Image 1 (cartoon, one colour):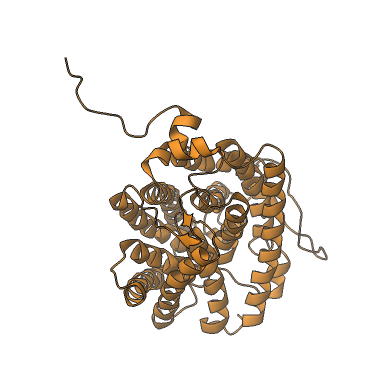
Image 2 (cartoon, rainbow, N blue to C red):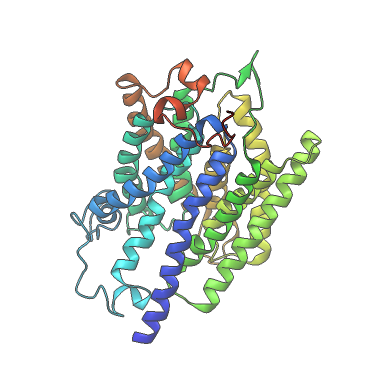
Length: 409
């Protein structure tokens, strides 16, 4: 048993590192799809999210998410206290069925916690005050995400109901997606985005970097989904990685094809978001899908991406990186897909629908309360001058790219 624990634990630590690496992918994607003048601002937010997110998860988040609901409780809100003092069997094969140790458990889950705020970061890029975003991150990552996570992963009421979310199509991606939707609505669009009611393209300054970001995220998903098996079980980890990759590939190809049919051009950014949509879509049920189902789920996610991006523009919401389409719309689809395609007959569509509805109400309400309060107190949007000249200069006093031209004498 000790040898098996070591093997399982090493696999989980590798997956933890891969999920951590995903924050590099998010940073690359966000700065690549936005303008050069806001690069430092986006990077600062991404570094803030992972550092503060881990500290908050240590202080309160982990014990809010895994409170050990007592029998007879409502399974909605509880806490095991502060810090992460391990139980007596936390480093033995008796803990977590020998899948990993207590410390690995904390670190793996902590890497997930920051992702919800990272999703919001991309959606509000180029016009949100850095201080307001930091306050939002502290509250949302510190309290909202772990409470929402406890309802399923912590053995709460949705777990009792039979709701299933393997690695977070809803618990991570939709939790961030609902907040992104609220934030974009309350912020308003960037100054140049809509002219005479029609959306205008605002090209990102570094598409190669955005492409690298998507490939890094795809690699990181090997840990995101592969680690969610919670052991190095050879059959289940292999199946999970196969379904994950097939859904990503199908999402990308179909998004590119549908985009070409609809817009008559080969749009790389739509191709990239299709890959991410496929990844988000398969995440809720990667361990309970056949390869054929994974391809279908990814293909539908890729189709949804194209129409969701257009819909977001049509209702005059400005989402620079497509976060709402990718994380919210495909997160909902992937969660519902479990009720349609799962190989486990205990997974029902009604239970999945109930889970989506519960998270929608909770995340919409909490994110609106946080962001609306910030809007009415300290403000959430930078001035017109700051937005036009760039947040890097006004909020950080630096440039992301130095001028390397030699001084003339």
